[in-house]
Image 1 (tube, rainbow, N blue to C red):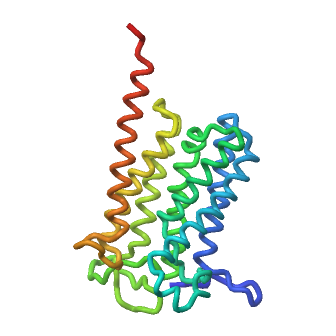
Image 2 (image 1 turned 90 degrees about the horizontal axis):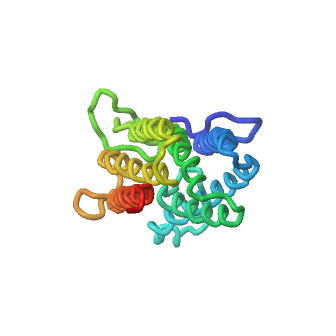
Length: 252
């Protein structure tokens, strides 16, 4: 593991923070290019990206802290300590989604079109950030003796499932699927619903191998949340696709 990627003078550059920065820059540039292709002002994409990044980090940290509030009551200063990760993806996604809706409404941008632009890039960004998790030694898997096991927990030589890599590869595959469908003819926002569904499936599977507390039987909190997101996403796709077909049918 390499929590500190390199140093500039005496300033350490953390692997996790560096991966976040790389994901932000790469995804913002790609979003600007796609927005321009769809006749949307790229400058608005930069503003939106900043809002999404800030709100996503705040939301992710807030939910993570709330899920372990007794620990942070004992040492409140740790609430702002992100050196060891400590971000809940579901919290960040929901916070960024709400801020994104508010921003697009205020800016006069079609929110569903923007959702289609962003969805593949959320998957790409997630894939990049999970590499930062691997270097940081967080989000690790359970001990195992599979041939590809790694000592992927910071400060621990135990061989484990490298769930950071599992998550990264799964999200990269989702990015490829969504990017290939970016010119779809379905309803606006389709790619975002599809992303939520596919991500939730991958998260449910990866959680099987993660070293996390189990809330009900063998299921973690993230798995239970993923089941709700899977149902909601694909049910929405079914309903909205049916409505889109009905609208295209000529009236009798």
